[in-house]
Length: 370
View 1: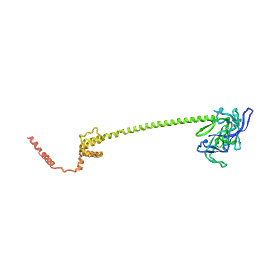
View 2 (view 1 turned 135 degrees about the vertical axis):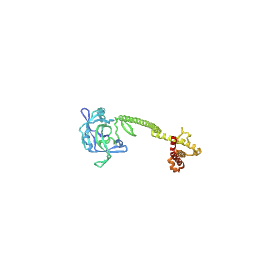
View 3 (view 1 turned 30 degrees about the horizontal axis):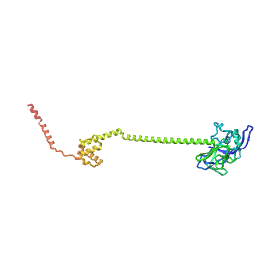
View 4 (view 1 turned 180 degrees about the horizontal axis):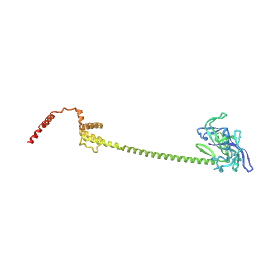
């Protein structure tokens, strides 16, 4: 996260080359108060951030304040090798020193316009730096509560600004709520509203903010259009898929596999065979199974038998007729009727005639010999 501290330029002097040299306090330990919206916590009015000595005076932090570009007002972006020539009006030195609870850094302003601004009264400084925020609340060694803790402080640039926040005290650049701004008569400020919050910035800042807000609005509009078109396309595809699924299900219901087809053919053949056995003259072509059963029952028992009767009744009547039409089974008949007594007289008469013919057979031979 990028922050800025505000400090007063003091002890300045002109060099033989016309440069403006000075020492500046650029950072301090302790607690600074931020507006919640400036540190990613819009739900909090203010946020107390603790900067412990171990972080402010860490070797890496102190080194990061050396050889930093000095700028005339904060640029709209972090200063780097890519844009250094565009924004730099001077440099900080490398004799970084601890000054009580502060960090003191030597600096030199080399651009004449920036020097003129300083000599006209633009004497406040604002350190631009990056750091990490640990959102673990706690209490300082002095007993003061805080909401977050700064770590990994790294300097980026030192800006000359028109308005300070607490005189010679280092302040986070988000503490404008308690300190009225001091306007530079040589600078024109504009008010830009961001998320309903009016912000007073330079012409350059207003241009940058307005451009960014326009791009954000355009991006949101384009994104909303894409989301809407995408949703419509998905809905259309879902409708097509649902229609296809319904067609597939309908076709599946009409498909009969080989085994089922054989069973249907066998059942149909059996039904027609029963119908012809019961009523040979009944017509079966083009009729459904239920119509064939009804026609058979009507042929055998008359139309009145099935008038106003249910399909189940007709099926039962047909089954009874089919049972009665089955060919006789001798074994079944014996089981059903029992063994009947056979008349023995014809059998005995035939046996006697057979015996007599055997006894008279020799007589016929003698007659032939004579």
